Image 1 (spheres, rainbow, N blue to C red):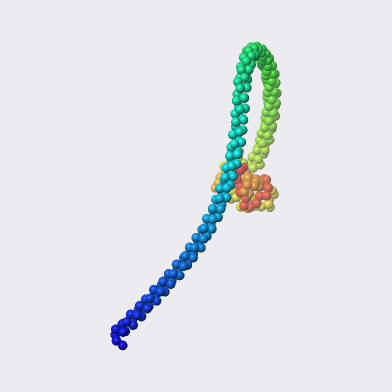
Image 2 (cartoon, rainbow, N blue to C red):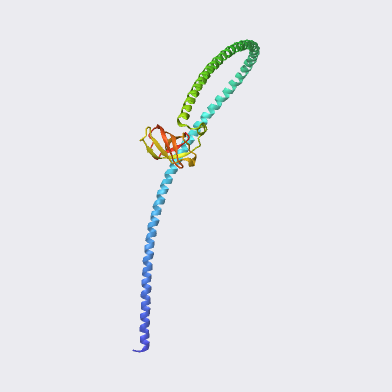
Length: 283
């Protein structure tokens, strides 16, 4: 085969392939166009249906609006008729009011005369009431002054009785204090005589805290040992109050004093125990 024949064959094959591709593309384009057309036709049909529904609704609304307008026209005509009737009544009322104003003017003139007479009578009545009130006030002031004098006299008598009673109570209290002072003096003298403590040593005890470090009931009424002694100025005859926290436990009186310790006799025992705190002054 000649080369030119081979070229023509190849050219025919290329043209056939190109035509086949074009045909295939045209078929695909035609298929897509038909699909889009059908979709557009369907959408257009739905829109037309919706527009028909809207048109029917609009026609119904228009008919309803026309009926409402007719109703409003009828009401307008009725109101206009009523307004004409009310206007006529108003004119008649105006005429009656003009007549009444004339009559009222005459009545007012008569009332002015009555007011003048009443005002004169009221002035006379006010003057009479003022005179009566003044007399009543004077009488009330006199009665009030008399009552005040009676109350003042009664208060003075009550104050006198209260003062006498207070004086009598003070006298009783004074006698009781003297009796208590004498009894305390006897007790104090007895304490000094028993303990042999100098008066100056127990007149004013310093604040000395301590702790019960030992306790014994072998000796009646009992003996405690405190952890303070001459180093804290403790002297024989001092009294310590015993506590457990905020609970009062009793009282002890110092009997023997060492350098750092002292022993004390229990004078009041409410359950004193080892470890309780002690103090030379009442809390």
